[in-house]
Amino acid sequence: MRSRKAGPLAGLALLALALVLVAAGSFTGASGKPTYLNGVYEGSAPSHGGELKVLVTVKNGKIASVTVNASDSAGISDAAIAKIPAAIVKAQSASVDAVAGATETSEAIKTAVAKALEGATLYPVAKRIKTDVVVVGGGNAGLAAAVEAANAGAKVILVEKMAFLGGNSIRAGGAYNAVDPARQSKQGIEDSIDKHFQQTFEGGDKKADPALVRTLVEGAPEGLAWLESMGMKFDDKVFTVLGALWPRSHAPIEPVGTGFIKTLSSAAKAKGATIMLETRADQIIREDGKVTGVVVIDAKGTRIRIDASRGVVLATGGFAANKEMRQAYDARITPNLGTTNHPGALGEGVVMAQKIGAALVGMEYIQMLPLGDPKTGALEGWVGFNVEDYIYVNKDGKRFVSEAERRDVMTQALLKQRDQYMFVICDAHSMPTPESKNSFNETAASLVKKGSAFSADTIEELALKIGVDPVALRATIDEYNRGVETKQDAFGKKLLGNTIDKAPFYASPRVPTVHHTMGGVRINTAAEVLDAKGAVIPGLYAAGEVTGGIHGTNRLGGNALADTIVFGRIAGKNAAAKK
Ligand code: ADP
Image (cartoon, rainbow, N blue to C red; front, side, top):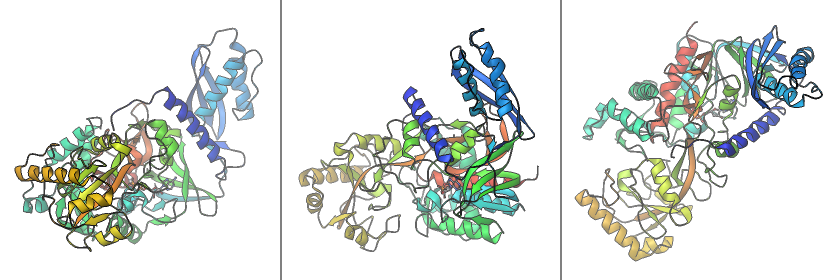
């Protein structure tokens, strides 16, 4: 995706989204009279004299004072500024009557106070429990954080809203990028931390925070060794996952992301972390500036306050499955586009963090992949494994982009093809027998059986099966093969492997699909969450897809799982450290 600022329409959409979320909040069992969390809160709202600002002070759980800073015309607004703050303090609520004759200023003060109190309003809870560290989200980042926090001696509670662990991590292709001289030298691959840095930073159009990129690439090999030390197994050979730009992707032996989740959840449990499933975090609690816990709603609908004496780790993943939210940040991501994500990738972590003052970064950078299932948007179901050994052709049987390009470049090229539709084509070099598997552990035979792939003994026969002109497809394959032999690809593909000439030949239809949200809460290299002024929000850490600033405009394939492990570990360790 290209960089793009959210325009005014996106602003409106965001407002609508905020209203939807506020409305949704009222169904979460939030009832009874609220109290307020101590602190000083800023809020603002447009008024006739420009942006009107308020400062709300909460002491002993009560609104103690409201001060207003407005450029509204004196005379008209005086009465509102004099009366509304006192009325709000008296009512302990922003819902008070407007002052006659100064309605606009009155409404602006009420709106600004309501906004200021958004993250400070605490509804009654049925139960209160205490721990050292709370981790929100049970994907890779959350589980890695839980393991490290427990390793550091902290009592850990991890809450996961779904009935199972794994999030997007378990359904990811599984590729983990890390510089790995032991494996790479055997394959004659030259690599370095600097090269991984450069490709990640430039592959995201230099929009990432270089310090975070450095932390990612330096921590990735250690993260890999850490997983292996806990018994996780990876293939001896590295490969180049789609959009990785270099052969440093490690394929787990167990299918997709299951190896990560099994390894991490066993370790977390073995170290004594408590895992609460079907338990959704509804609010991050920030008191007197410091994050001290969360409010969760368990499977029975009970609201529970969990106090975390050392820290809270936010690891709730991204928002690619939230159609309104993703379109609000990038209007081009229309609701008709499918997603590879699990249905729980709704961005609640971002919204919760924003309410207590976290800064967001890169929210408009939303990644699409060219390899979605035409019916579901899922990533599963396509033939091929190594970027080096397959090609993409459009409905006219023609290539249109290098298959080793950045993900955004490939998807943008696909969006320009007829019906925004293509086929991945490979041969027996990729899938030598009917039992050969793609990276989703699906066999060639099963893909053909379920209609996700077509196979044939000749290119011409394959073309007829997929409704493409056989002469055109033959010419495309011949030209590609000549390019492989002469190392001169017509589309500039540098990662060239085998020629496509060994029957059986395979084709899988594919369309663009929404895959990863690069934006999220702003963190520093210690995985501490930052506010709009760049200051650390004490007690709050974040890791994984919920964060922004690590991948810039476009994430390299295979960098996400490395990101979750590297920053999950940092967040867990730092959250557990005694303050
Ligand atoms: P990452 O790759 O960053 O670890 P994942 O998508 O793998 O992200 O995992 C995030 C997990 O967080 C998912 O399992 C998701 O269901 C969970 N989650 C999201 N929002 C909440 C929430 N409000 N409370 C608890 N768990 C949540």
